[in-house]
Image (cartoon, rainbow, N blue to C red; front, side, top):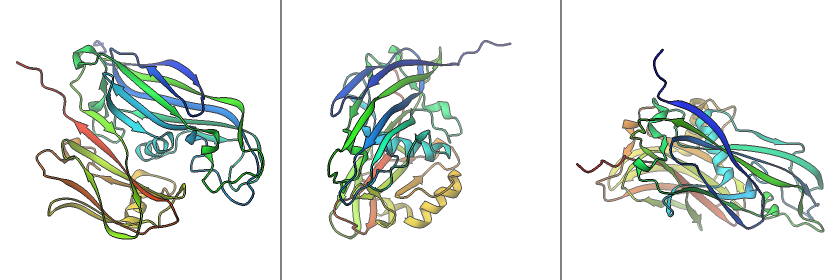
Length: 333
């Protein structure tokens, strides 16, 4: 039996207690090739009755973590996502929603007492639907120029789990058991250490101030893009009646044009989802798993996502979450 040169191991790094409006920076162990960071948020919440309106947000509880940032060498951000968005990206990647358990459903704005919850998500570097998922492991070793590696958790507030319309007459949202986040790392003990493509994900957010048939969402055309996920919402609620059509182009060269609802339903079928996700759309340039088919931005003057949008509600937004692939550095001769 040959020597196993890629042994997968999982280890718990730390557990952090919720600190409303604060942040915690976690040092990530270096030396191996990281497949993913596993995050599990648990706790118990109660809710006072709203006077007239409001409801729990999408994936209620996830809003306790406002943003997750994974950084290398101090300032270079590799991943920057909300916990809520990360859970939906996991659902698209694997065809099933990660753990999301509440002992009571937080619809409406009535009293909810002692609701226990557990939510999980993966900040993943390996691409689940790629032909070779391990091509995008994150090499955390010194040979990849990594001197520091950390993840910062930006905590929200308890009331953030409710939509903006929530107007409690008395008590708001309280914690019966302080929420806590457990973090573990899945990594390969990999003597070869790649080289691997670097898998970056972040959010480009745009306010929709008026109905616009040609809202332009620009992206810097420097690397390759495996996919774009589009998210639309108004007044803290995901909606599928904001986006009408999408076009990806550079100058006059058009790479993709899709009708929004057709794309959303196609995503359900192709990704094996139980139902189409409200307000989420996936534009995938590598549906067969070949990352060589990624959209190449380098050398182009621009890269534009053009959206035909209808403004809904008061505070209406469209977000683009690129998956950007960066070629490994070539060592000097």
